Image 1 (cartoon, rainbow, N blue to C red):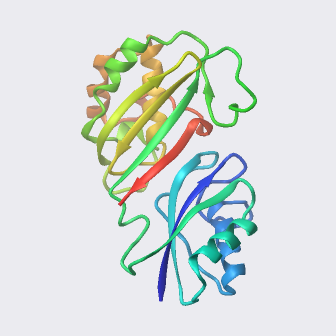
Image 2 (image 1 turned 180 degrees about the vertical axis):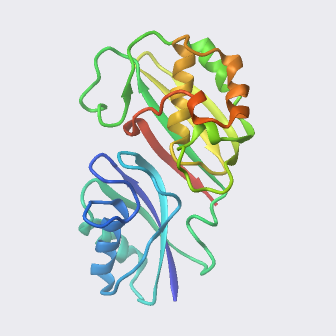
Length: 244
């Protein structure tokens, strides 16, 4: 038995998220179809996480098991030839059998892209959330400083999430800014559904003056989704990398 690790990049615009679902186009479904055609047997891929509909990735990771002896370089070329152009496998590695794309992950990094110019370039519009109204960068940065550390993120996740624990440790949270774009970068040991998008939505409310930075600790403590800001659109979210 062999365990192959795939690193993938994709434009999630036209997919119903990562997870296999009947009757709709998903990233896992397209990947399993392509691999199955190459290996001539059904396979199950396991991703590092289930990116939602419309979310993009530069460094998603998946793995699958096979007994076929195909060369990894030949497999790499073949799978990209069969995948739609919105999905590309950027590397293929043979791993020990105990490697698991989700369970073995130690940290992930996401970026959320906010377009700040009044005109969104057509070459960026699928990958950014446009906000041209005034946002105060100083108050946004003040609020952002509350996120690194170990916190209970119930207020910043989907209300119906099935995860038993909502506690996550954030290693890094910061903004990079240019005249046209603000990029929120967050690195943590794990993420809940809608977590990054709700954090960004809350920080935008701070930038608009609708929340004060000092309110963030109380939002954590409340464990109430209604206390945080809105969930911003999926198209601005990018899974940058997964660490093992």
